[in-house]
Length: 246
Image (cartoon, rainbow, N blue to C red; front, side, top):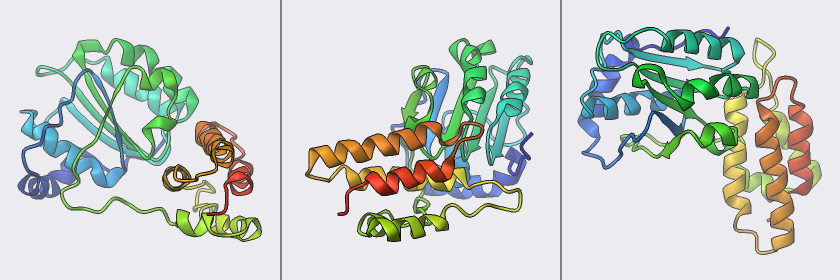
């Protein structure tokens, strides 16, 4: 099971700062499931919006805030168990940020997201919401938030440099994002951020045939990236081979 690296008690001071910097926003959390493009750094901004909506964000037993490097089936089952508990107040609110969600985890949450017990509110912060399963996206609202002047996290691999390089150079550049951590795992969040940047650049390609082929490779990589046993290196190499040189 993933280790929790952030909870609501640790963000109180940052939240007060963000609340002071964010102006009144038109963002409305409609429905019970929200998807936000971002990372763990955006948790305080999300809590700021919740506070403006009248939800207590400090010492609130009904507020569950967690960050996972990779959200897997065990994490989904734990979340379902927590959702099943009765709220002490009006409703329970779950803010989850993660670098990636496995397909198994997403499927395990479908019924819960379809009919949340106790009118629970779910906010998932992920690098690329459109990389999630269509069945999850259909149950959610994708919203954009202000980041209180904090620049969005950039990909460690520059998409423009990657696209401007020949295939041999691209394969070499991929080593930057294919480095594994101490747990022998890829930085899924970083890879998804890179693919999202790449997609934005490829969208400007004038050759429709090349653009279509490249976007298909990017979409395929994003769709399978978080699957258990995914051939991450092979998926990215396919993108390197098919993306046009621009």
